[in-house]
Amino acid sequence: IPTSYVYARLELSHREITVLCNMAYPVIAFTDRPRPYMSHEFIEMPAIADLFAAVSFHTVPIGTLRAHPDPWLATMNAGENEYFRYQMRYWGIRQIGDFVFNDWD
Image 1 (cartoon, helix red, strand yellow):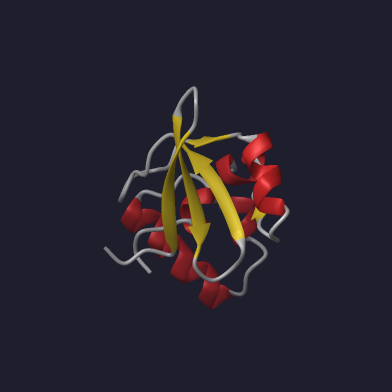
Image 2 (cartoon, rainbow, N blue to C red):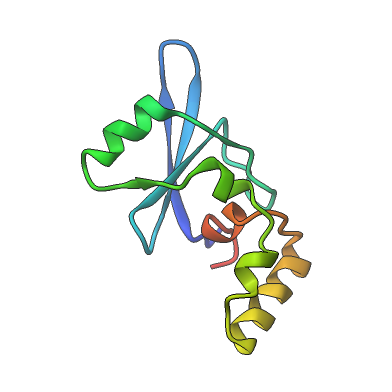
């Protein structure tokens, strides 16, 4: 499956989590599990995020990941906007995080 991210499963003492890492930029996010072709359910993991920050990865804030893309799309030129709106309709995108960590690239 071509995606814009890679992921790793981490087994912690109290739970398993998935770290999503964008393949183009050093940004990460956390989920309980990967969900190919579905909207991700992002979670916060501040202690783990701090470990990744020490090696120059930026954790995308949960509010940004869960935000609806319309305000973000309004900042783009017409061609970009049309492309991403098509992707929203085709893939059922409802949050910015699903653009950053997508399953169509």
